[in-house]
Length: 210
Image 1 (cartoon, rainbow, N blue to C red):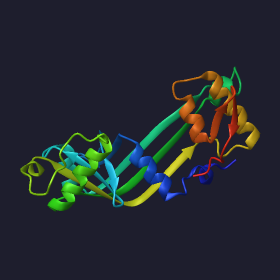
Image 2: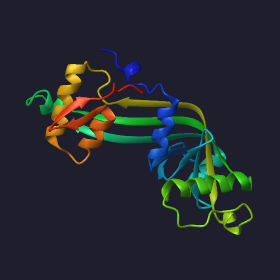
Image 3: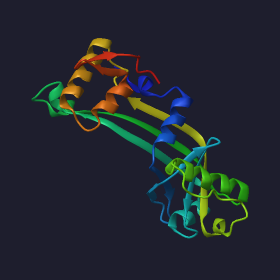
Image 4: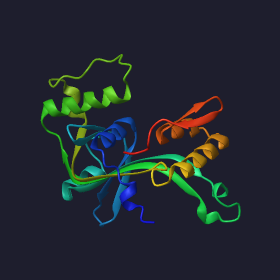
């Protein structure tokens, strides 16, 4: 069975929601020796671009100056599916439910103070939604103490695997096994899969289509 098309996130809204929910992304740049350098970063996705704050000096900044073609990736493991869900003797049947977004784009450094302020305040709103801080303004000297990296996507693709490629009976059986395994992520995974727990059992409330 060809799964590639079935695993692609078709909804731009879902991709943006996922990016705004996740706290860690990974930027990939090419170093002076031609090797990829991958670094985890806090980020915000706004105005169809990725923004990250950084020190004003560093290898990743040097890399972007020399080669502004970058990669950016965000992923979430939802649930590991042990092989014994299918066959207690066949380890190759182990699988994982996940969501991921991969961007190929152009990296740059934000010099416009209004845009820089927007990006930094966007980061604060994302990571400290409870508030208790004074928003930045474009005339503050602190803006000069940080760099803001911007990635404009050339391609933006999302993939997800939450049982959407399975028929309804197989999806329900998988959901029951996840519920019985009772991992720390089980309830969240089942909700994303479109199930709700009721009277000790499960019912599907929506088709898992993104």
